Image (cartoon, rainbow, N blue to C red):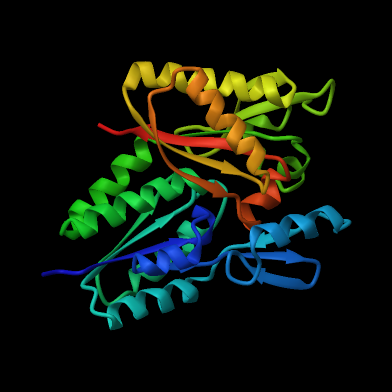
Length: 284
């Protein structure tokens, strides 16, 4: 039987221990506090990252893995007996990670399909888990790719930021660049569009109201597309994730909760503290 290897990067914000248990090879991005470099989820955990973020006078910077990093990951899987590889990554619009993976794939000794989820964090995690599910069900390479792409293309990611400061300073604001969200306690609800870039969805006064508005939208979506698999995400503020989950239930959303994920250091560099959001896709 062919063995399909799975690779992801750290911005899916799944704990490395869980990925290792699922035989998934994670390639980390790097976050820099000045001259100090930390591999996302490997050398810096979310709690420590947000503590440093609050105390650091400047915005951290981030760096994608190199093609050599992916070459090494692919080689490890081939050595372990994989006949092909599916490599699942964050949106290519916000990072060169997909490009690095693609360059490495061209020289890999086995076929490698690189999937651009056009998403980040818990929404990308849903696609990674789809790949795992298809592989574990005995799927062929093409079947694992198809399952991954189906979930990625049907997934949506919405998030609420406490401030746009980190997104704008980090150069990742996209179509949300012009929002005057720092005025009058306005909290932007943003989303990833089909191109994999960030755009405004709504501007709401206050975090609680923003959570209610987002929950109402997700509930309306579930009435349209049916029962959904949901993954919540938060920037080391679990109370906000609990509030969002309760709001989804109150709004009547038809969903199954897959996970509640911490936003890691790389995505957290641009989301900032007190971010909260939801990724989802139809279960059918």
